[in-house]
Amino acid sequence: MPKFIFLFLFITTTLAAQTKMSTIEANALKEKVKTYASTINTISSDFTQYKHLDFLANDIVTSGKMAFKTPNMVKWEYSKPFKYSVVFKNQSLYINDNGNKNTIDIGSSEQFKQLNKLIINSVKGDMFDTNEFSIDYYKKDKNSEVHFSPRDEKFKTFIKVFHITFNPKGDVIEVKMIEPSDDYTTIVFNNRTINTPLADEIFAN
Amino acid sequence: MRYLLISFCFLCVGCASYPKKNKFEKKETSDTFLRNTYFSDKAQDYVYKASINIYKRHFGGILIIKKINDANHRVVFTTEMGNKIFDFSFIDNDFTVNHILEDFNKKILISILKKDFRTLIKENMKLTNTYSYHEHLVFETEIDKKKHYYYQTDNKISKIARVSNGKEKVVFTFSEINDTIANLITIEHKGIKFKISLKSI
Image (cartoon, rainbow over all chains, first blue to last red; front, side, top):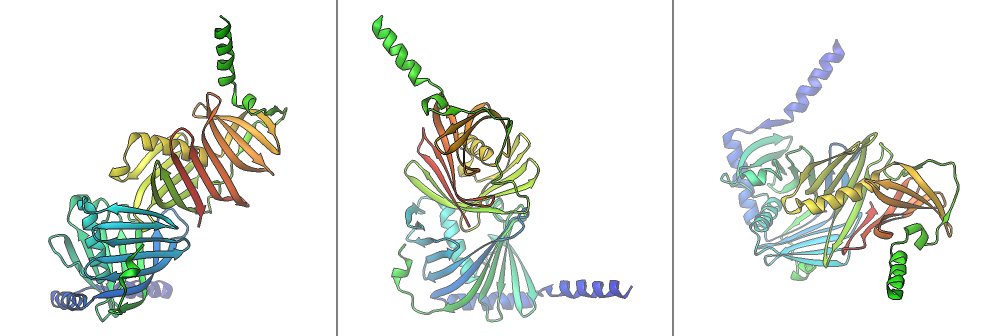
């Protein structure tokens, strides 16, 4: 019997680690993140990506560096376990797959434009657009976790919900993208620095 | 008449069987089955960085193959950033598309991929003939009514050729093999400019 009580206490405390925010708390967080995001000119960060597929024994782990510069340049550079980088810049997508270079014109594709905007907004954390997402706010220990569920029917077929975790400063520390099948991709940021000058050459690919 | 005979002879050379063309030597053996173990371990997640060249286009991604159960494999392809492009199930002789991005949802592409992956994951094949060729043993079998030749070198499968009218249509190569895992795999279609290169990660 005591074992059961321990287990019960353990479960309730684990659940309690994530609680829904009050409207006041949620608004305060939103303001904090938006204000913080508006001061961001550059971001450079290490990242580790975990791809979870329910049928696999282990997540697929890849890692590298991410760089962002206003208004709309983003580079994702994977270095482990393979070299691959993708740059979003000037309405184009520049891919360098271990030396194999490829450019995709985004200008013509509404879907890619959306994707570009989404990537930028998610690395900054500012996705608080209630026309596009239904949004739920949670407290998680010292951090906050916000769930953004796309409203667009087509978008929903790719991603069911984004979970973005913010540290107390309002900076993004983790982005989790959950697919309709419940498989997900989690990106954890490390060594994130804001507004260190980044040369445009970094965004050449 | 003479020309007709000559051209007839050419025609015959043209349609000679694959073993004949390549001067395989027929071998008598008691083996009746051939086993491909590259994707046979249920405990293993088979994860490959994939490079695909189709005509002049190149694109990459991650190919994941998992044996869920006997005669049950899952084959999933994602972008490097984790977005799922397609998700197939091969259960016994059935094939199911669990998910495919709209841009890739083309009958002909799915049919090519289905055949290629089926060859890749098929574990037990009934032998129809056995040959020797240089340092290789070559096993002949049929998958989906198409002749396939498995080249074995040092007890390991190093190549599979899908053959039609005596010609190689699709060639699978396996290299950097340790234990039961082929770390490098290529799938090359001879008639169309389509090549998949896989490197285990």
